[in-house]
Length: 90
Image (tube, rainbow, N blue to C red; front, side, top):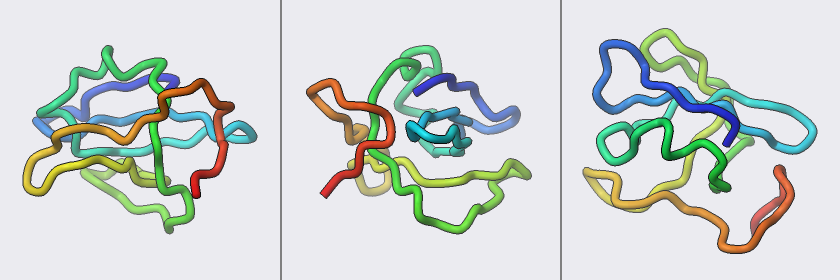
């Protein structure tokens, strides 16, 4: 993850800038109750990139972060080993 910042006037939403290797995307994720933005920078996370862009609180999101939990986020799906940005999961 390249950068992360809270969405103003939202407890849950964080705007993330992520690298897919060949491109950079902005993703708005509802993970702000569990994570502080500065703790996310540099992490390797799993995202869904083949979605239509959506707007959350007026900010375009170009994907979705995968996380565990029902009503509340309990953890992000991450990769243990070092892999190149944009590596596909299967």
